[in-house]
Image (cartoon, rainbow, N blue to C red; front, side, top):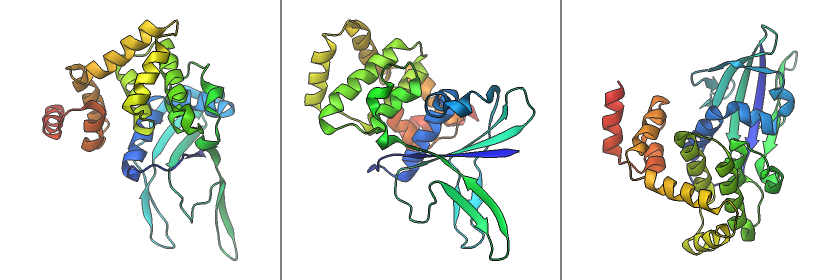
Length: 261
């Protein structure tokens, strides 16, 4: 059995670390194959995605100092044409952790070397967002919001995000997930939104984009939002996070949760 640790490094956010981890867990868990395809193609071509098995949350305890934390996303799979099982552990980092070894983690004693993990790292802030706008990869579209754009490029980043997801044939739940993630990290002001709509109006696909944005807003007011909430409840995500995504109140979410049990 082999373990492949992946570390994602993003720019710090004002939101809590818990909310951040849940957002990434939902996004990468839903688009795991697409995530590897766009950011780790060498790994992607070796994995049999028919054998994907999400594992329950694991708890890691540092036996030396007693520190305990949860692993963010752990997925079991196999190599193509092989019975070799590998465990992929993906850990998003949105803040500086002084004792975190970014590229390598070693367990050893003065008298014996036990184990060395080598990490594959993805520094989103160092990624040029323009390199991804011509792909039809849904997770690349969502993560444009976390890449290294300049402040004056904010409107253009969202415009390209809308163009990308307009090209994709996604169901409403996945489309809403991408839109909700993007808006959690790149939210335009009212003035910027107005400028964006003026620019979108000049695009060949303007009608589709307007339909998408209107649909997204309306779905926050219709019964369709309950379908999204139910899927998120099944994955046992935090009620406050689901409320923010769906605009449902906590009491309504509690009733939905009771109906599922």
